[in-house]
Length: 247
Image 1 (tube, rainbow, N blue to C red):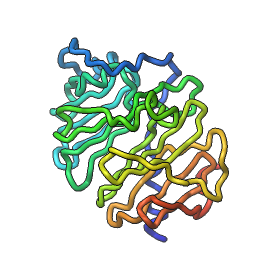
Image 2 (image 1 turned 90 degrees about the horizontal axis):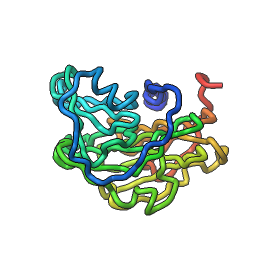
Image 3 (image 1 turned 120 degrees about the vertical axis):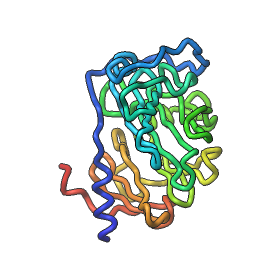
């Protein structure tokens, strides 16, 4: 139980948030006319607010930033300068980033800003890199145009040490979902994550976590402050309690 309560602290991360802006075009066609290297302020001006900041687990000077309407950016000098990381994600809303703990060359980026703002920025699915972020490709079964609106916003991605991926997603009506993959994101199953909890509009999941020391243990908290736990790698879930830190 101590691990569970310690993990709940990981669920509360910083969320950059500003006034809503109109949805941007989500065409995934490659745009090769990328800007030159930018300063941190130049990157923010070109990409909008930063939604997620990620540091390479073994190279702390190497960073990635997901922006509201400027796609994914990377820095190799501890954030002093930035360049666009992927022409494929150019102009998209990149809201979540993670790396496979067993192989830091495998990375995942989620698109779509599924926050509580009324004009949430729609995404185009989840992207994967197998070369440390040098190149990216869309995982086809996460594209809303292909599989439906449940993947319009990818709020968070978690990977266990066993390679299981959990994606916390939501649709345009702020309904939340948990998807699970055991094959590197090629196929996904919708997890019955809300068994016994309140099911309905705006029951969203913003963070989902694996215990780094135990790939069978995972935890998330929904919009109703239900702390929900899995002991089988995210396949099934049980509500533990309502968080005392949320009303």
